[in-house]
Image 1: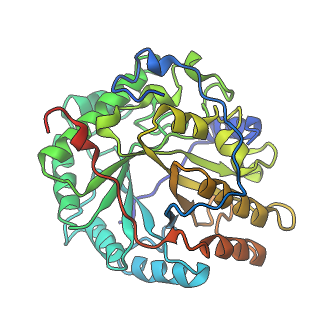
Image 2: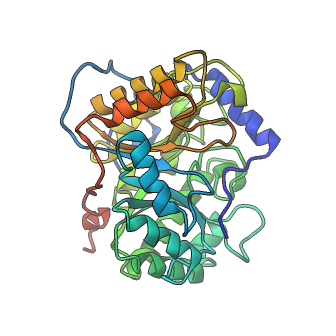
Length: 379
């Protein structure tokens, strides 16, 4: 059955709303709590959005629940390509550790159907499993309690026989009761280290199974869901405290949504949402703190605003990402859920998205970086 995701309690949504309202929206080390991780976030330098660059850019999409099933996903990928002018290079789906990723399993069929179109699968992996603790799960993962499921998932994904992007425990710095979030695992200065240790354990299990077709994507939520301000390292919940280390991460990124009618607050530009003060200057900080890592925005979208506002937001977002030398891809959340995030929510919005996809540098076949495991001293 389809794994349901992004359900948040009313209190959790309220916390997220506060962040949305306030959003005027590097040395890479293996120790997420060391002295380098204590640096303040890097404030953004001006971005020249008029400069064209030939760097490849990989547009991705999440296509919604109904379009993310074995019988529908391949057709939905092709239909999205027809609609927008470019088939997505990255296709995101959401799965848990209970999933069967073998050829006979429901989740495995989803991945194989998506891969049959030439798209690269991008999995958001929920770290819950049958028998997991009722609250936080990070200590249990580190202790090996999820190893049987991790081994099965690793071998299932390995059997896909194609590249798979994997985002375990997304939005770890959020405050909406995900079992892997810091707020659910002590809600104190020790929580990020637990997350980093759990991430490393997961990667080690996959590597032990020979799942070398995986690339690992670290995607916090923009800003800080506890402080709703540019607090940087003064908060234990700062995103950089969760980083598991260069040898365990292939790409970095962030999730962000402009939804004032959903969470309150004012309309936020793409720049303010990802790189403003209440976003903790995250996009600039990622680029400066992890200069060897390319950036993939793992989820983003905007609702409609006044006439033409969403269209302008889309045009500006892709222009800025294309002008940023470290941003190589972004996954549009193309579903009508909390709001109508879809690219065709209005004719003007669709035209803006089509114009962005018409850029010759927007690629339909994803080319990955070399795996981070090559940086391990043991290899």
